[in-house]
Image (cartoon, rainbow, N blue to C red; front, side, top):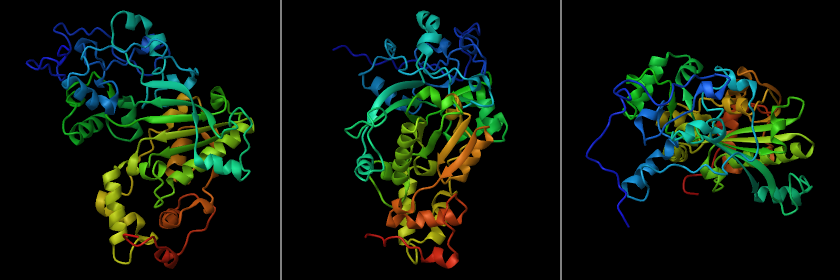
Length: 421
């Protein structure tokens, strides 16, 4: 087998202009242009430097794994993706929000259909990669089967099959940030945003501070996955009942069933409500965001768990947020300013039932111009015993709930399991 590892005797810095004559092979991105040909493709290739018109590379957070594969000789650096038969199973949009540069700043609305709308660029040899993929799936959860056994859900053969599987359309979205718009969302200057991104990533992307002509950034972070129950085009119809949950990743609970929080119970409750809504003739939507541990990371989250359990007096609701601040310096870094972009990509203008107790998410959604008719909390019976600390602390802090907050004595008296139990 021949060695396909790249030559390492010459490095070309990305902080300098593309070609000697200053002319790139692809035009700059004109964010918000109605015609995708005028907007231009997002090109983060590492194969031909003169083709690049963004900061960062395709695949975002997975670029490091690609680098390892190239270094190990298992992936040719010049590999081009064959996009034959990869087009979406369901066509999303285009919607009016796609051409509003204030509505969508954190994803490429044309990212699922680059093989179609930029076919000429692909034919010309430009290395384009979709940043969105849409497919069909069946999902099976024990909680769905339990709901069927309890009579809360009835398989009807379309949304919910007789074997207990739910039929969904799912989409994966990689982040694509238009820096001027992102800066406005966070109320800072673009220069401040670029400098902070550059410094807090250890100088990984010098173009952030040296290439002001590049306005689009492919950040090395996780994206979002959408699960739609019912007819996907109906998501954009305000007359069709929409049940929706925006859920931030919690691997310990979502996957492994850790009972110190309400993440999986809230998620599965929202899935049940989405199925019911779709069976009523509406549509359901789960937006799953990769923001593990309140965007603090799983290591920090587990350190906080230890601090909560070991503190004097044990884990209690009155000190729930304090322990996170002691370790991380902040209660939460899940800033939701960019989250509604996904909803706008789907053309959503109205959510009839929002399954969430988060005021920050609710405020971000409604501030972006989407109407929310009703907020749906988690049933008390679904809260695990050890998660009472979390839920009581959140209610006392003003999170949405039909339950009245406990007084100071009640908060101090709400205890979790002792450390080691």
